[in-house]
Length: 124
Image (tube, rainbow, N blue to C red):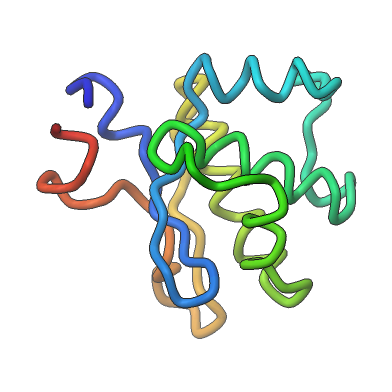
């Protein structure tokens, strides 16, 4: 993919699989087309439907084959806190607002967030 976006791609683990998530123009447009106001996006406050939709949109660049239902089948309610941390970081990166890396439950770095290695799909 394009060199300038590789630092905006985040890994997200769902159901034991690792996916690449990015909020590029296509992902943001997909959310707008589904009626999501980007200025007010808050997956935590929006409930299960919004969280699933936001994840689906963010995965489309690298995982176009996944349907909304596929994404929902891989997510559990217990995943929401972790998933929302990835969403928040990826959205911040999309708008050039890099933040502090989230902490895992043990205080160490979150294991499923952050840009993937430079040998991943973003380099192809």
